[in-house]
Length: 155
Image (tube, rainbow, N blue to C red; front, side):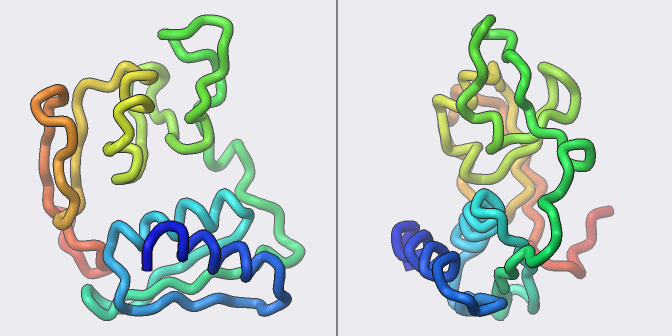
């Protein structure tokens, strides 16, 4: 299933009245990450289930529930230091943890050279076992190589 098929499936789900949408267990962690990101942008809630190769996602409608408040999930929406007077077009794709210093994003963010440059990012911590370090040697990388699994040891 490619990105266009995933988006088409999510848009079809948005149009119908089914309460949930379950994706296949045959998706890669990159595809699951893409589903989580796109479903969230469309106002849905997602949850992953199962271990390793049997992992799958269910997408839920937010019936009667508001989206996560901005106070709980602060997205970078102020003026970035590298472009005074302009809002960063990547504002909803990356969370700012420490202003103008530490950001939290996805593997898709780490692949997007324009976004990385717009935030003046120069070091990436890659914690996914099956994601490639993109744009080497432009960026410094630290790799933790963890599985996308609830039982993964983070110590």
